[in-house]
Amino acid sequence: MGTGDFICISMTGGAPWGFRLQGGKEQQQPLQVAKIRSQSKASGSGLCEGDEVVSINGNPCADLTYPQVIKLMESITDSLQMLIKSRLDTPFLFLEDQSHPPSPQHLLGYTSLLITTPANQLMS
Image (cartoon, rainbow, N blue to C red; front, side, top):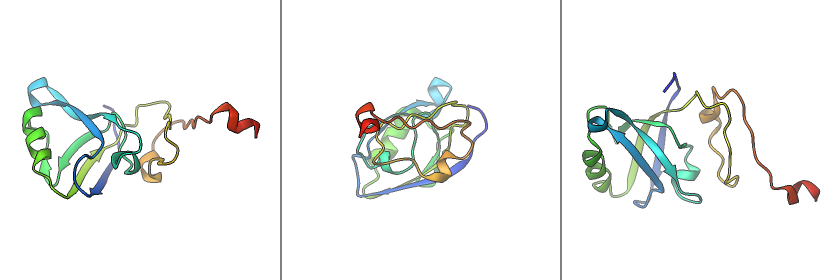
């Protein structure tokens, strides 16, 4: 990952949070957001695919294996706080679910912003 901004993402209400992670110490890869489900808690939080997870509820993730991360996530019952290093090396950001756009601070550093609009909305 290139340089990025650090942001805090907060979600409440317990699992399912609506995102999938990948990476971990055993894979020699940073822990990253692999997928965000549309219309989930994560989709409205400002979390983006490709973001690096620095900490989960105050627990640093750099030295955690993927199974340790899963165990940590399963132990969270109501409130999730993640320190995120946002991706800044993506030339375009596609917002498929425009009902939950990312927060403005999450868009800082993107070189371009492309919001897709269905053609039938352009005609009306």
